[in-house]
Image (spheres, one colour):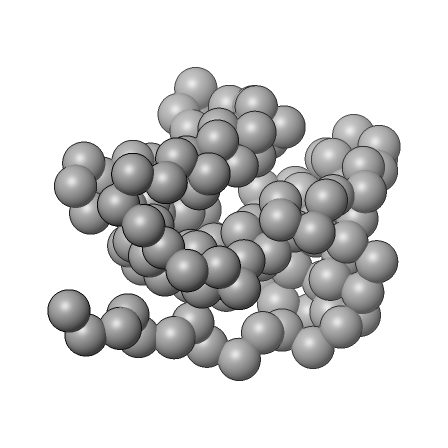
Length: 118
């Protein structure tokens, strides 16, 4: 099977990715809640959230997301699903009640909110 297309070059350190009132500071792996609270993300959570924010509205397969973690992907590996679930819990629901990350069965995940890069 051919290897997945690599994710684009990462956003340079110190950049800010903004979406729906949230801000991810890529320099210090800090996620700022719309109410101003800040949480430092683990390396894995930061890598996956950054991949989603750099590719909004694009379907990212588990294999591509594994590459963001610098891991080899195996079909029975549930690590990506666990990390995505943790990110979903941290973000909660959008104002309209929907999730920020949608699961596309047998395809992967897609971040469904516009993102601004500073």
